[in-house]
Image (cartoon, rainbow, N blue to C red; front, top):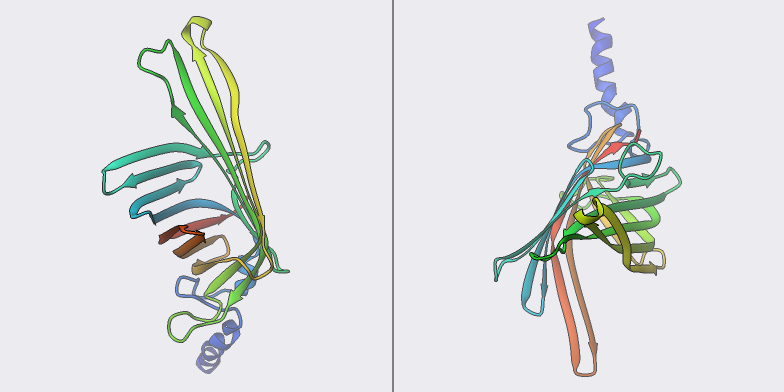
Length: 255
């Protein structure tokens, strides 16, 4: 019996080596990394901090998502100016969970949908009515996904994935909500503006790389290093900006 146990223990690494394993993965799993990744996932938490430098002015944006709660804090360190936005992840009709989802399928297709909204009080001190501006944002990205190979001792094989984006669309709608005590608390919504930005890319032209910190059957933890630089020039005029930061995301298997 002891001999059989020893043989089995020696064979286990060979059996599970084909499934792939990262530092945060379960010790034993009968499912491959691909099988564990494929499915529809809800973002249960997100923490992002990005510093943008433009025209010698730095702006730090911190975004936090916890369940259906959404918060963004924008600061300009040089002036101690701070703008705090508090909102929520939108929930589509008939759904129990918020619409901040990632989808990966076995054929290499991927999609991300991110819907959130926040209110800003625009009422004046002497106004008899409450004026709220509500901003609703929908971000969508679709394309392909693939595992990346290892890089020396920095990354293991299949420890990172590339989300290769082919279509990207952002819809921003701003509405004004006016309520008056004189009218019994009546609410009068009015759309102020609607902006749609849509882009398409050739395959491989634009991608986002995530490090798979943890890959389990019902939970995934992703990390993204952010380091972008943009420069455009026309005649004697030019503009440039750089964004540096990181983002950490926890995904739960969607119900």
